[in-house]
Length: 263
Image 1 (tube, rainbow, N blue to C red):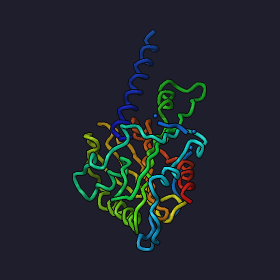
Image 2 (tube, helix red, strand yellow; image 1 turned 90 degrees about the vertical axis):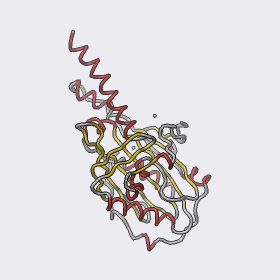
Image 3 (cartoon, helix red, strand yellow; image 1 turned 180 degrees about the horizontal axis):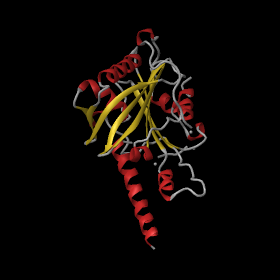
């Protein structure tokens, strides 16, 4: 779920709906079926205290990955769409120090994992109440979250070091950076670390402010949690936010459901 692709989807949906509105005034794999959150706890914990843990195999990560039965709403895909399944070599950053952030936003695992698995989750828009204006109804129709979930296991302290690298990148690139994802440029104007969720050994949450359009700067949320030798990355955008620039909350129940499967 690249930011540019999501932006295009949101803007295209908005344009199509607005065209219909003007006319009227003139006369997201194998689906198995979350909420908002501001994470709790410290934004990061010391990676140096991380205990050694056994790296999970690809089969074990697949078993631990989110399934439809684990969530109460939205749609889980256990096979990520080709447009969202970005390879590591498809992600570049003008400043190499910022590459971990670009990887996380694109759903690419940090460092050199022993095994990986991916999932995606798409929320459901809230039906507007009776009497809602056409403009607000339009935004409501695309007000849904899209999440990429990347699970990666590492040998030794690899997971802790990968998380440390990401938090270091957030500090160094707080003023923004430019990246290219699958040939499309992404201009990040700011990177801000926020409170991490509970449920893991350590973690962080980062909000990237992306230049989504000429006059719109939109949030793209990243939540990364380590549990033992496994690092789980949640990359989340909201379609309406990509069109308006307004903030949104990461679906806490989806994050909790995935972390709960790694207990």
